[in-house]
Length: 395
Image (cartoon, rainbow, N blue to C red; front, top):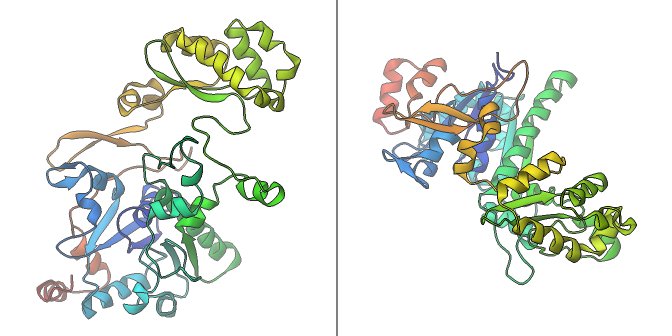
């Protein structure tokens, strides 16, 4: 059995943050019922690269979920969702605050029909405060949360990471919060509760020592390119054959081993470089030495020498690198699956890896409304009632 078997989750989210949160729960056994608008569904179905008219991202983001259509502009569609939530353990939603309340699906209404419900609410700015009602995507959360300000090089404007990291971080906090709320019910006999995740706060929580450094010293952390500020040496270098490598030798013993592997015994034995403070004071010198050494060798040779010296180092991987890497393959991080026309494809594996009750993928993202009739049947709707709901456009 998977660890969350028997847990029913209703997903009212679209795109990234809410659906990624419930995807994590689905991978570990929760029955996730995704509510989608009839005829259109989650916009993610049409985002980025598509195969056969459907986004490949969709097949990943919605794996292990059941798709149920409900028209939330129709009273019977809302009534069906209320019946579903009455039998659920968790609701995950990422609407702008106030939208579900207008539909009669806000927290006060839902806890009346299900006092034990856990409601995960992901939004740009949280459910309270002067900005609560404003729209906010991951990019806004990354900006307000401080991540964009420190990302990039000091002589250029801030840049984004290559993925929607703000949404994904918020989703992780949402999943953690949902599990803590369930644990509270089990152990303390508590009632249900709201897990309120703001995208900007989710990012802000990851900002290391930014707050106390400003508060105590007035220090504003800035963009520093590829180096780790105050932690030396850790940087990206380019090899003779044009490959980009990262070398992290900021541990005292690791630094010494790297210098020995480079043939720089003068630096290895220099007492000023025996700790991080001394190395950081001479960062430019050290990065110059390491950069010149990497530039005089091909990437494979640099990685071999670093490996022999037990120095953390890696190529900066592309997707092509990942598909050929033995570590990825050994850890089953590229799962084989089939698209609806039986075309084989691979998707990311499951994280984290539980030794006794591992997660897994039972099916890829479903067709729009694929499970509507099945799920309504479990709620006590007759075949005739389901047919009528289809006819009037409620589902």
